[in-house]
Length: 357
Image (tube, rainbow, N blue to C red; front, side, top):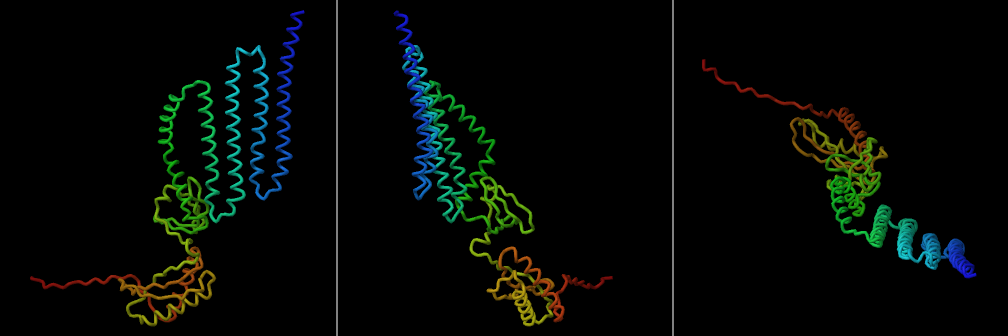
């Protein structure tokens, strides 16, 4: 009789624990429906979608909290597991840390996703668009790193030697990845400085030039006017002297060097060169119409009197076609007007000396 009562009492305890677990499981399912249906309908009525992202992010963590709490409360009520109560409590703490970490990660991800989709599109720069993926990665490392430290501490694992080992290993990794880290930091500088932007035409002090197609975290892609793609490490771009032709305006003022013989009438040369420059400016779509061409005599050269003609193209690329048309037209007009462009010549003077013999 006593044994039967003991068995009945034991079954009651197990049934109560099972009931507690089922109750929390039902609460978890209800919370999932509550977040997915009721709260979602409420958040859709607001002007911002930040609350939509937050509700969606916290749905799974709340569900897992209720399930884990039901399992823990069901287990701690059983006398048969009294000797393992410490292990159960420690497992519950670890589960709480893991779920809290998941909730924090999803919450930060929701905020960054909202910012990238609703706020970043309204800004006049793409800095925030570039920074959001990096912030996501860094936040993931920080959140899960802190969770790992808390879990190891809860397991009574000394983390001081581990941190020291990671410090030495991190130093070795940093040395090995120095070029990559250098390009990453340089890319951060280029993006946040926001002087060089996508779509600008730039000229480096190394002679490389082209249209900026993309500024990444490790490299910058520049499309040369001939069509070639230049992939430039950001560390070199950050240290280079850059001329940005698109920062102020698209049009480009440039000089075409020329030269005529010393026998030429310079007034006539100036008149003819200006006529040709004006004609080419009006005729060519590559020329900026708001600029009056100029002729400036420069120097007495070895074979010619050198001068330059100042023209203006609608953009950096168009200067090449405009220069091409001007040189052809000027050469044809000089030939028709009888104006000579001398070949490079050298005059040798021989000194005659008396023969002592």
